[in-house]
Image 1 (cartoon, rainbow, N blue to C red):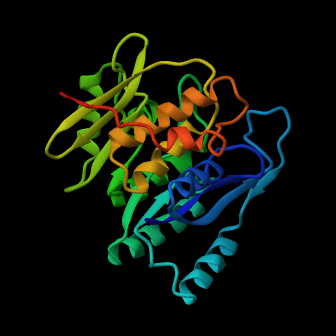
Image 2: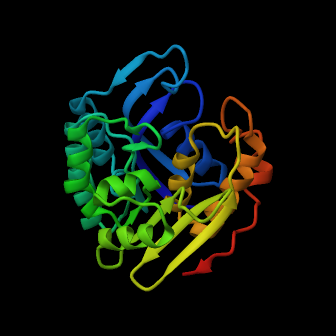
Length: 266
């Protein structure tokens, strides 16, 4: 069992952000501490949505209480997800620095945007995250668009993605690029570390609910290898096709037992 602290968005209905990451990790037996950066009724892609960002001062108060109770630094990993404002990013930066000093592994899912729409956070949020938070990550999990935005590089090929990911690496850090361009009709994850690069390929599927990236980042934060995380995620996707939300709970007996995918060295 791992103990994971997650700072990200939360929805009352459905599975995105914390509401995807936490139940996925709990299905595997991990202990999750949740700090919401924004509280919404549901994913904004639905016709009606209500809620608002959680004030930074309120989150700071929660962090102080967790620390006073002796729980804050008793973690194996710290996962950072959606940040609604530069002040939230600054909060994440301070917390990540403290976590790293305590020997806690820091995972950053740089939630900035995706193709074809581009950025869906304010430019200042993206810039602050790029300049201040990304350098603190032990593990970074951008999608292909986010990797291109962070590096300022146009990415169309696997070789270009690998070169861009290599430019983000700190010593001993690792980058897992989701939605990597692995070939026609396929997608996958590109793993780039100091010692090697690997690619894990899967077939593209239609009708996939929101929250897939949140689950993947959570699984690797929980200590799963990229191959096992992607194997379990692929099984969850298969069980959730054309459903309104990921079937994290109802399909748990199947996806939690899925076999790992085998990588190809590149």
